Length: 263
Image (cartoon, rainbow, N blue to C red; front, side, top):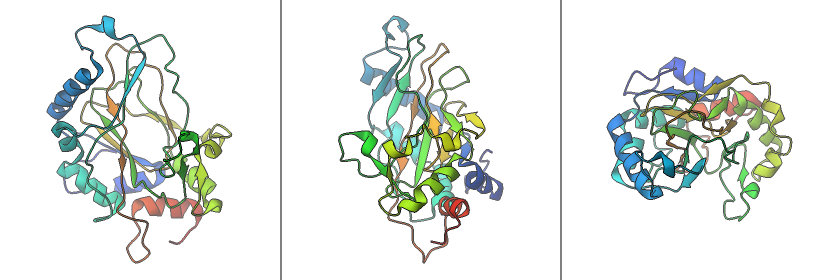
């Protein structure tokens, strides 16, 4: 599903988000911003797009960036309208930084960070990230977002997505209340609950954004192409917890439908 309007998402797109756990938005931000952002990222790595001999690592992780091209990319009218449509007006913070960036390079070496997972959202003061947590009301995260800052084809290490896997994670979290589960607990069986889900790839030209349910199971993969891949995976942060006095957002509806809940 693609977004053809700067005024929000269509009912079909929202329905797809609820059932599949993500929606793809083409031309979410201008390709010129992606070009300017890549220049900053190349400089941060101390590497050059013209000197592939220096691309000796399969992946380099960069942090959060606050320069103008990144902030502008995350705050276009089209994306703000989509945030409103999926999370609810006034229920999210405008992104003030973009990252992290796992920059992936063509390499025969294993990157060492592939594997199915969800992005947990609280308890991040723990030094061991496997102790970070998620709960059924998605404390600390309104959306997982995938920002394509370069053209990404099937050979360019696109993120793998398990379609509809957010529903299994919601049901897994439900019995554990406010405390939720750690990433280690969620991953104990290798995310076997979602193994039967169909898969898709987060491909597209620079400027494409995938807005994902916080519980969506996804995975990195090795780069088999020729051009380095630039993708950011920031959260959209909520302004507060789910509120029963407001209409449920599509993020909430997806959890409700998966679990039979009313909140």
